[in-house]
Length: 408
Image (cartoon, rainbow, N blue to C red; front, side, top):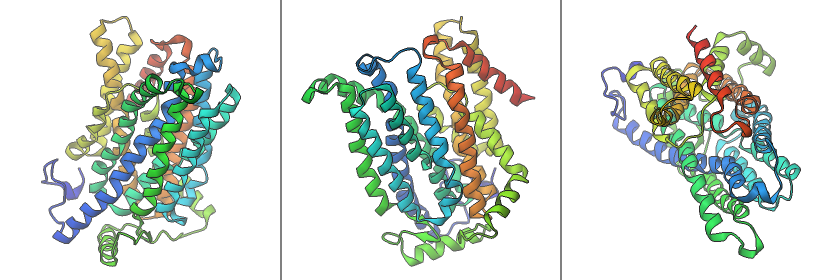
């Protein structure tokens, strides 16, 4: 448990040492950062996953899809997301984040919109790559902004609330698609699944525009439309008290920074954990398990991560066996999302460990997500071939082997 949380109950929002002025600042930052991050992540996940909902709502028949082409589309999205993250290993400290993330959001919103006009597999592949390219930096970018404003003892809870946005996207994407199919199918001569992409874009772009005005940026490149000079001064002073880098100025050349990072154990350990939490999770709709991030407040990051993986290991064993009672399958499917519950604990931990250097923090956060996400481009094809649903036997074996490797 973080030192500043010693003696505090899990439900206490502040450290005992926070002054009234600090508490007012924390609430203001929470209201500026978290709601936009949650809503944008919710919409991002809808934009990311709506291809699967469209597939089962008529896209497969209209575009004459065959075999595992849906899996190929998802792999192309991941490829775009991985390629798009590479430049942001260095770019986050260089530009105002209240322009960077909303600008990328507008980009993925436009290419989400263009999917409504797709006439074939190749055209849709191009759009999926570009959606992934523009969405790439969102997740590490949000964690970079969280690490720029909050102390280590404050990051886990904010990151956990942020991650609920993805779960909301998982919950609602299918509902929006079913509504579009039921009520808009045939309107102006277009299939309902095409309207889904239009609706998604109309949700995405206004939120992106709002982000330019609402998001606070970072302490060195702040959005002063809402933050006052006294807010900024207090934020910087409380961060400097825990030795956080608030300047974002490079301390060495890019080559020297890379040499320092690759010669340090931290990037390898953190990236290893990032790979584990992304691999072989079922897209099931029990988002409430994401709230296990609060276990960080009880046991600390290592305890929360161990708990999430132990629970997920049990679920993967059941799914690998498969020939079990129906109730056991429901339990296992519902439990598999505990693995991603460690996400915000892990990235909050990385932010805290790397708080001394904003450029190293930017590189490592992005690299962790880049490498972990890149593994899903090929494991999805290997472990989740469309033709083997719903059991996906290989995935269960893969995940159990992975967790078994973790135990060694």
